[in-house]
Amino acid sequence: MQDNGIATAPGSIVIGSDEHKELFCRAFIDTHDPYDPHAMDWPEVDAAALARLRAMPFWVEQGAVSSLLDEMLRRYDIPMPRVSVDPQRGDPVWNFMRVGYGECFDSFFAFGLYALACDSGFFPTDLLRTVEPIVQEEARHILFFVNWIAYCRARQSLPQRVAHTGRCALAMTLQIWTRVKTAIAAARGGGDDSPENNEDDDFMLGVKDSLEVVSSPRQFLQVCLRENDRRLAPYDPRLLRPTFVPAIARTLSRVLR
Image (cartoon, rainbow, N blue to C red; front, side):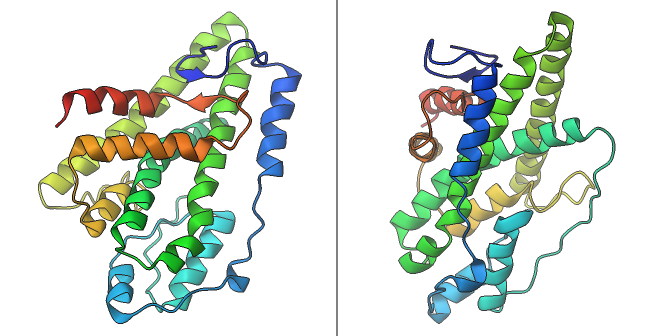
């Protein structure tokens, strides 16, 4: 079954039905990991690893993920990053769409970067194991988001669906443009200090540079694709998966060296 770039197993569930809503909401609730950052076993790290850790650009989010990162920064005496206060204004649905599509982009690359960090030995294995919940949490978020988008669209009239599809396309375009601007700024050796660009926008580029990943762009995309499939595999196969970013990555991996 295909729904504007989001796919699921053919004939398994009616997208937009009450059963669909129950499935993706129940999956989100049941897979919640109630980890307590203060009770986690934070490993000791040597001076070299600590220096690399302190040089990393940290991703600051809301809720439990933010709590875990806050505790990590406190535990390893790392200065708290500057966080722009950006109160939500206007339509909350539009704000959620923009954040959700941004998370779909960033999570895809985060999955690959985490795997490379594990394979390279750049950070201690015990530390990576401790922060594993951050990475898997993103898989839950994007799974819920793409199913919510599809559910809302399926329950609308035809004119409403057209408008909804247009808003989705605009939200995705804005996220692409933000990341293109960041990539251009990074290629020029400078940052983008515009109000639209914040710590979340350039997180992926900063992490990749910090890890000094030794691989071709094609290999990097292939790792991201593999890890994206692995991270989403544990969830109910009837649920939709994001396909937009993976499709772009597959296309690029065929032409890049």
